[in-house]
Amino acid sequence: MKTIHVNTSHPYDVLIERDGLKKCGEYIRTITKSNKAAIITDDIVGGLYAQTAADSLAQNGFETCVFTFPNGEQSKNLATFGQILDFLCENSITRSDIIIALGGGVVGDITGFAAASYLRGVDFVQIPTTLLAQIDSSVGGKTAIDIKGGKNLVGAFKQPAMVICDSNTLKTLSPEILSDGMAEAVKYGMIRDEKLFELIENHDLDSIDEVMDEMIYTCIDIKRDVVEHDEFDKGERMILNFGHTLGHALEGWHEYTNFTHGMGVAAGMCLITGKLCDSPVMDRLQKCLVNYKLPVGTDIPMSELLPFCSKDKKRESDSLSYIVCRTIGKAEIVKVTVEEFNKLMEE
Ligand code: GLY
Image (cartoon, rainbow, N blue to C red; front, side, top):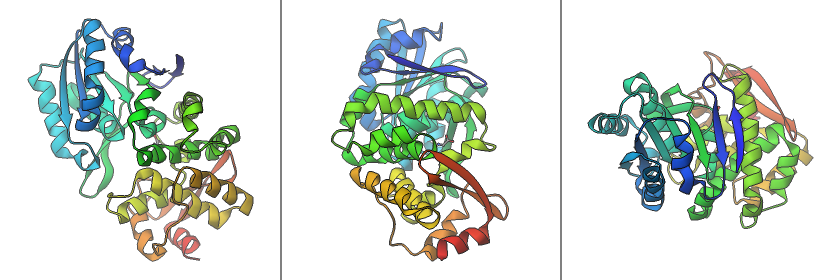
């Protein structure tokens, strides 16, 4: 097992271990004296892994209850949030008990926000089961739900008490969902670590499992470093949003259906890199993304995409910040007016 200690306002460990799910009870026992755990999951992940988690928790003295909601972004809303709070209350979960998010980014985000707000805060553990959740959303304490006005517009910073990444859970992912996570892995290479980028570009969707734990470790370690410097997202943390301004716009244009977050990030990274960087950087980025069956651009006219950028959370009143990597492994934050950004992208 490999461990990454995240030294934020509430420090915690990220455990990376193949088959770690089977030992989750043992690990969670080290951070709580409580004998009660509420597992929140979705109908797909729950069917695959809730019993394994519950068995391990029971072997370690926990009484468990499980709340399951339908898989997908459309569940990350106020209605499901309310159902989770009611479930915690009905099962007499107290402030000293533990809540467990078992699933991908949607489960982690909504469960984290429920843990942040129920009884004004209950400890929660992330057991991410998608690549995207393992290398990105489960670490760093961002929790949120979607409202009519947009994605992730309501939430809280709430660091987990522990994160358990079991890369064996990735074996049940469809190739599309694995690709979704690979876009974020490529992003980490682009913003911070050329060696990581090389590792990824020397593999493809079929062979990446050979180096999965090494890749997951390196990505999480980069995220740890960024989050430790800027836990509350006031500056440097913005580099994690490379490719996301246009990526979010693409997701919004597609109404969040049949177009994953990773597809948006991949195309978004290429759109900004193509505008501002030398062709060797762009060529390597494109080739790498193609290996993971990710898009490297879009046919949608900029005039249709740019209005979606105005909803970006990184936007201030009349300016926005975008991220550019002029060399692989180094990111710059560039603040421009919305007008300048639109002009750049429309050229
Ligand atoms: N996923 C971006 C962040 O955690 O800041």
